[in-house]
Picture 1 (cartoon, rainbow, N blue to C red):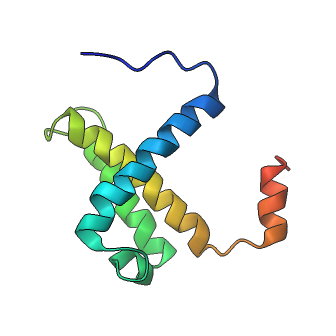
Picture 2: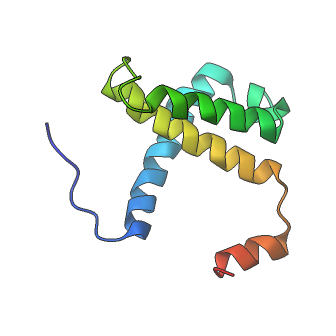
Picture 3: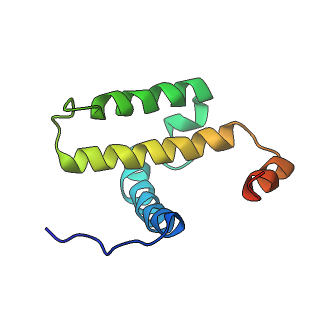
Length: 104
């Protein structure tokens, strides 16, 4: 099994992960559920998104996930995607986004 190169910083980790999540959305989620506006997430509330995330958290706690390593990794991508949708459904203002980006 080939491992990915060592990643030095959290920002590099995120940048690599973001590429994988983006590919997951295009090649998996959109193909199964459709694009934004067509998919079920469009109509979901923040609470519904959090419940769906909890499903994946619970499934992957301890030895509960018998679906295999690829599905465990895919669940991590799904949680990241849900977190992104949750963030935008919270409707942050430009000021809030700027404040968060500055680390305030």
